[in-house]
Image (cartoon, rainbow, N blue to C red; front, top):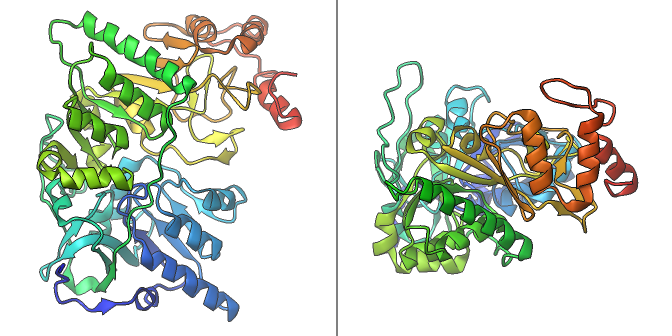
Length: 494
């Protein structure tokens, strides 16, 4: 039986009654992992009831990163969300954002706790946080993610705790929780190795703020990834061959710097390829999320340790972690996102960042978040923090989409998340472009020849030829021609 610290036990509906129109509500979770589950759905039901009575009810929604369907689908479909930050990944809310029915703040994830603590978003009225236990003195043992929950617990006026009995209390063995003091007199963060621990296995809350606990037993909503397709495997092969070459050039140490990998099928394919290649020695990861592929690598002994913010793994993999907690409890560190994504730590540890992009222009500027430069897909998330501060920044994307109707290598990106100053390596299934030390003209030549699909190379070469000379050659009358063609005809080439 899990302890609830003698706080009142509430139903989800009773908890939802404490949420009012225009409240800023902070929910736990970093991805669907550790997200609040039953209270958001109850808030959605309450919103529908109030709307039927003609009463206004919308809330401002804050999470650590992307979240669950209960938050980004149920609440949205109940027309109960007016504002959202800092990231999302569900089509229901994406459609409302692009229709400007929901105001969306897309931001770097490491900045969320400081932004909340400084009050830039205004007062956090209520925090709804998932945990395995809360004690009478206010120790809160979180579940499968840390995210920004410690800061939400600190800053919220009122707190509701979802005690989830589905999750093992042993998850706390991975947690390393502390809160960064506000500037300007911060001490250096004493994380000097991937596995360094600097905090406690629990977050804290003022017990007087806790309205009560809601009992649940629901799993996280982490979906299975597709098996790697041929394109993902080719991208992974190029990346691993490149890293093997890099390792040979630095053979005196024979030690890889820690990796970071974004979420998705391409990232999982790369991680699997790293594990399968005998020329890659066992390695560490300093990343945002623990993914399925990382569980297998750790069980095989290829992954020596991992620092992350959440266990974004499927139910089957989570059961493996819990059943091997003697291994994972000492080889995985779960941190708040202001540490897992901190630019200074990323740079100090020399992280090798492996992230994906939607499209890349011929000079290495990358768009990871917006279609046509207008419609948001998910957001910048944590990729910018790693790409800008990594020892080595790698961005990956298939060279085309929609049966070659869309090219990922374009003359100019209509939206840029990571610019040419940060991006060092671009990879498609066509090949890998190492852009280090190359000026713009040389970058364009290498990117077109190496990464662009053959169907688009002639167009891209002609674009450069017809462009106005300068440090960076562009033709402002034609730089978005491919995107305009796509909008009007459904394909980039006429």
